[in-house]
Length: 81
Image 1 (tube, rainbow, N blue to C red):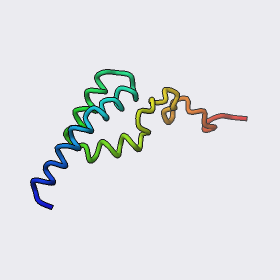
Image 2 (cartoon, rainbow, N blue to C red):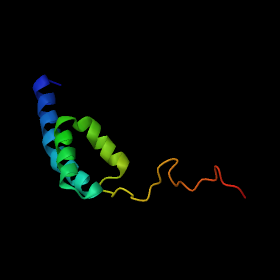
Image 3 (cartoon, helix red, strand yellow):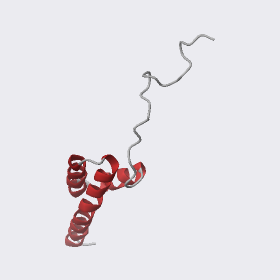
Image 4 (cartoon, rainbow, N blue to C red):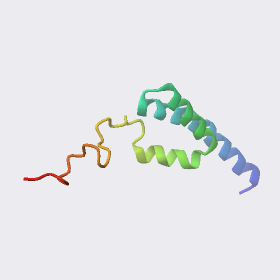
């Protein structure tokens, strides 16, 4: 492939991934700031952000009930029976 062809492919992928990833960022958290961040990162580093968005579950909301390790995780450490 010629360099100009690769440049065109990269440009098209960047342009197409921007709104797609902005939508993902908005649906994920419901904030416009996250939508802008995902959109900008999608334009700049789309080969990284597209797989990350797919791994997170495209457009899935963040679970707000995920326990943080050691903070009310419900584990039996330190409990007496």
